[in-house]
Length: 430
Image 1 (tube, rainbow, N blue to C red):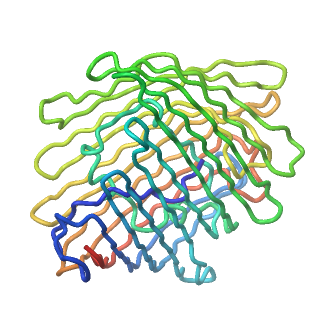
Image 2: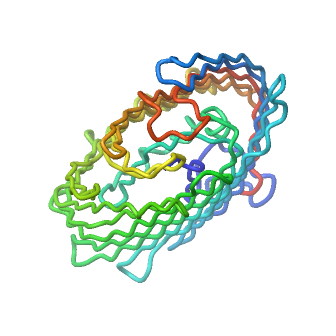
């Protein structure tokens, strides 16, 4: 599923030691933080699209200047046994020429988690979003059931996030989209090394009239047991259920069974390098036949120098993606990478890249498509709470054939853009 917005962690962020406009003024001791960020930028982009695969129906090229305005807010509270966080943001864009002003893209969410008694934990997350754009559905990985990646090594990953809503840069057509994602999970320690876990996800994507909405349910539960310092035996079962609302098509269901070893290990005494992986088996009903697939994911994070962090991950799995003419399972192999750090003093460099190769079958017709998105940013401080930045981005989507695509939606989109602007970051409360 296409992510609505990057999740905001409720963990109090130990960032630049600026005192808050309100509160005690000591960021190191604060358990509640409120931050506000705004971006204003201007840029230029070149786009090429085609309704037919390989450009057989001709290509349409557009060069556009634009302006972006972004507002974001975040709250994080860390108590003795519980944490809470909330975030919200809006992005609007003005395009030169006939496109003119774009409506706001909105996203908001909240998350909570903590301990229940001596042996239990819980986690809740809710996200809502609205976008005036249609984007191709993209696969997403969920490794919560088996990964115990050290959160310290991932600190600073948000530095590589794009400044604007990714749907703006990856837009395919002007078609409004809204929806929500809900997630709940709980764990219970059993004995010294064992843990039972259960989770449930609910998602709904609502398109403009004429396009089927997607609803999905994902319950799962299992048991993991630590067998060494870095390895765990995992046994779990999950069911993914998808429906295109009011389409007349039946629910699509996959059964995900994990029975194996999950592994997360720092490769140095200073925990500067961490590697992890886990695997599972999916049983997918495809009409009268049943298919078996091997799924999994792997990840590698590396800290080097005083400020640099890089990570790469691989995901293999299947999902029913939103925004197509008919529902079907998409089988994906996806790779993602991020990096962030400081070149000199406070000059920061960051970037991210995601690539996926996807296949699906409708009746007996098979199709493939590739997606690629990359962005990089250089940010230079100007004064307290104010910085100048330059950002470049590239998005590419390429379908082999038009099988399953909505009418009027291009099968190929290629876009490159750059933007320059200012960012204002205010630590409102500490």
